[in-house]
Structure formats: C-alpha cells, structure tokens
Image (tube, rainbow, N blue to C red):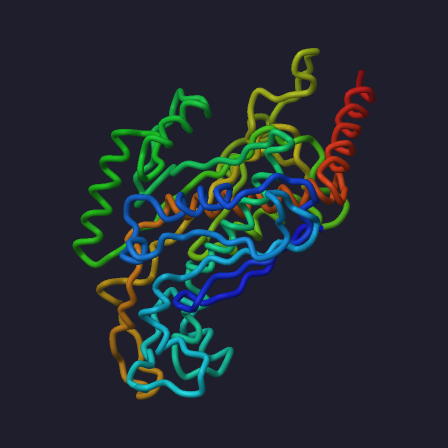
Length: 388
C-alpha cells in the first residue's frame, strides 16, 4: 500500500513527509520534487511569503544512489521564515510576550472550531497546522508518485478554468492546445482575453484588501482500465480522489466530468456511448463520466474540477469576537494570497497523482519497479486477449 503522513507548522523549522509503499528501483532525484515545489510557489496573485521561501527538498531516508530502495521515503523542506518566528514558535515552556497570542478568529478558517476542539488559548496553535503551507509536503509526496506513474506513461496535468466568476473560453480547443496555452500563462489560463480580465480582477481585489476564488481542472491521461473497484464503497476510485482533493485547504466542491451538469440533461445525452476499433479498442467519443464509471477507471482521461473559495486571510478582516474578552472586534489580519488558484492546481495534480499511484500499487502490486511493470504488462496483455 502507498500512503503518506505529514508533519510541521507553517512557521516551524520544517515541513516533513513520510511516504511508504513506493517500489524499489524508481529513479528519483531532488530536482524531480523541486520542479513541482517551484510550480507550487509560482503564479499571479501569490502573497509575500513566496518572496521569502525558496522551497527545496532533502531526502532523509528511502533514497540511495538516485533510486528508491523500498523503505519509507522521508523528505524535509526547511522553512526559511523560521528564523523570524523561532521565538514565537519555540518548543520551550514559555513565550516572551503573551501579547503575541492571537485572539480574534478569522471567519472561514479553522481558527474557532480548532480552539474549541483542542482547548487552546492562542489561535496560532491551530492556524499554523491548518495553513496551506502544509501542502508543501503533499506536493513532495505527489512528485514521487508522479514519477512512478510516468513509468506507465500516465501523465497528470492541470489548468485554471475560472477565477472570480470569469470563465476560460476553451471552445473548439483540444486538451493539447489547452495545456500548451496554460503553460504560457502565469495563472495557467488557456484564454488570453480571459487572463487579462482575471488579472484586472485580482488587482482590484488586492487594492481593496480582498481575495478571489475560482476553479481549476486536473486531468490524468493514459490511465488503464480497472483502477479502483465497484465492490465496496471505500474502494471506489472517484470517492477516494474526491476525498483527497476536498482535503486541500479552501477546496469546497469537486466534480467529475460533466459533474453538476448531469442535473440538466436527459440520460440519452448524459452517458458516453461505447465504440470499438482494432486501432483503439473500446473507446468513447465523449467523456461526460470524467474517466470513471462504477468507481473504476474506464480508460478515458480522468477529468476533475475543483472549486476553491476566496482565501479567508483578508488584509481588511471581517467581524469576529475576541475569545478572551468576548467583545466584538475585527478578525486577525494574517498575510496571505489574493488568489492561489494556480498553486492549488499544482497541489491538485499532486494528490491526484498520489491516489492514482496508490490504485496502481493495489492493482499491480510488486516490491520492485520491475515486478510492478511485469504485473502491469501481464494485465494489459490478458485484457487484450480476453476480447480479441
């Protein structure tokens, strides 16, 4: 089984992730991970923190001589901002100035619920771990899983489809063209006119101390038929992918393929008709299902859209209540991004890569990459013979 666990606070010493189950023999370098960490930090609308941190991973365990060795992989990313926060984030028994405690929970954040749940007196005990800084660890784990998927020619990518209610016009464009255009945009938007409008909106929001949300799409290409299962609720691939994507900070909705659009079309138009040819085998001309039927991959691209709410860390905070005095006050003003859709899309790629790698390992097994490839090859060959 492939699984991971993360640790670390936003302004602590470091972010740590332990990833288990990656087969031995996978070629892996720090640059494989760092490339994705850089993508996570980039994008129009990011905040001041990105000018401080230059994230770089260190392999602490599980990788030797440029290859995975089958044992748990431990990765660490140091927080450069730690030097500015070590007095506040100390693991010692006291803090120099209790006035540094944060007492005004922010609407839309984990602050108040976390304070009540864990019985804490300082919001920082909650916000440090609830922060999206934690996604550094997920990008690290996802980068390794992405490398594993690449051995089977499965590719995961993403693009921005909407910001602040402004949609990308991709009518008439195939996926290759959409991705090509999004790679040229610093908000990963495949629509030049739409990009201009979105940037203007982000500028206006920043000037008002506000934030904006949006939608990104994550796509997995060349996914084999049969990942996941219909036999139990917790084995369904779409359910597992949805849970991982929904766990990303600020994500409030997930849809596969046509998604909410299913509510307005008849069944005769909703489902993807099946065709067969010697060149393609079984295939569809549409992909309303988003690549998953009955909890299993059906051989088409897996397409998932994610809605990200406007980030609740506002330069001009909303009304709140001081947890100590119980008096009405404005919430804490904590630095943050104006718009993080491009970064969230990269995180979406990471968690989708993880769930697919996990499904690959469950389906094809193998303690080494060679064994896993052999099992995969046998499955593909037998599937072809069964319907020859």
